[in-house]
Length: 357
Image (cartoon, rainbow, N blue to C red; front, side):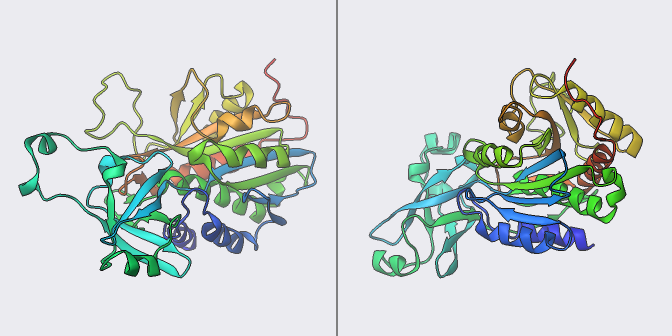
């Protein structure tokens, strides 16, 4: 229950890309009882470690930033116009509840939408995906009143909240990638609880809450350079196939509740990939295979090619409706991912050789 409460705390804390400080404060407060060291680098990544001076270093990365908006203009009528931070689905913005995060605290707003009665036939037939036509209504009576509350450059998120669904499913904005961050942190917590799994302190585990993933995997570049791990695992969300949005009958099945995906392909070190699958089987945790012929679109991409190279793996948490206010994941998949990673870490010894020979 305590861990679930922490997950919800992450989901209820705003963290649009470039403004991750609030969630990083939550992360540091939670992990100070478990990590041997906690550092925040100049980029804003929070790096937590057990046995930080060990020669064999394992890095678990989950990005804390979420997609959002930024106020770019305030009209004479007091409406806010915005630009996107990260890969916003403009179609999902219409009629959404949002929060503007100002220096003086959060301001609630809604994204307006022309009533259907007033729309042309063309507007009814298709969603207008021009973000320049999106406006936020905060109830201000004119520009002067709006400017007393909001400043150009303030960041905006979907209204944050958690909705419990059936069959261990839950919905919230920002599951991408606060669920992956949660898995990394819980794995570190369990390793701290049983340090015997770390082979007599000869293995160091680093959990990194990376920043700015949504605009180019930036935080994982800087934090991996600083940690200099031999092994790096990125934990992020991946598209599920078990909903009507999947119109590709040849898409590889990815089901909520069936376990995380373990990636394979050029972005994955063959030894790490094999060890992750072996760890899943030993932990009796189900998993799904996710083949990829190109570099992944998550932190594994940049982790692999940092310094002289890192033996990289990737776990994906199945996610419905990614980059919308109603993303859906399964609590069971988080549980399985934590079991797999804890077992994986415990299987590593100073003699483990990750070279793909």
